[in-house]
Amino acid sequence: MKIAVQLNSDRNIIGTVTTSEFGAELQAKLFKDKGWVLVDSDPAFSSAESYLWTICESDNKLVHISTGKTPDEETKSSLVELTKEQLKDNLTKDQLQNGLTTLTKQYIEDKANSRMVTAELTKQIAELTIKLDKVMGANSAPEAPEDVTSTATTSGANITSK
Image (cartoon, rainbow, N blue to C red; front, side, top):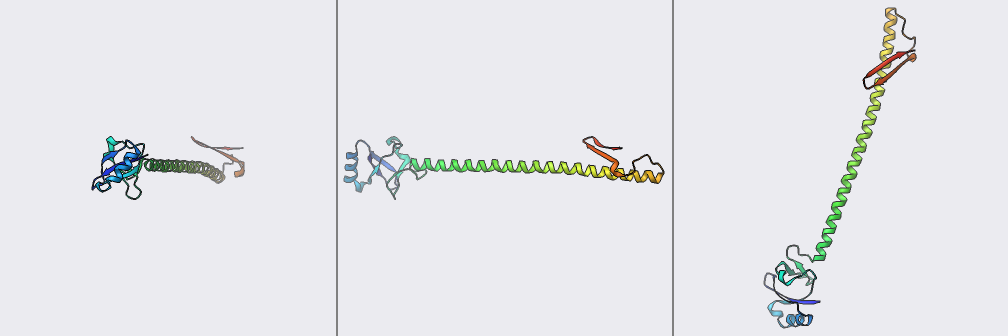
């Protein structure tokens, strides 16, 4: 449906004819020189709140003064922004998950490396103990380091011999 609106020099709406399309067409035709313009109505437009609206010069559509957009354009812009925010949130979630996975892998590798270092140190201590026992004349330790077993626990290392 078409309506007629009157614009002042600042392009603010100061009058409306919304009673009938014929009346709006006649108003816009007869009083064009007084700032009346024929436009397509918008379901969101209200004569009581016409001060919030203006007419876009490029296409003669009713637009909100605050945004310069039609209600449909505002809705589309909001949906685009929400979608962008959701994508950004998903990206952040993915980044957090990847970071957590990397830290977990590093922790597991560090713990495994720590156990290997503990086992190697235990083996070296056993070898040194055997050598020290030989030098001191005590021969109660095993002959070869291969006979030495070590166990690393959270409370320390245990060295046993066969």
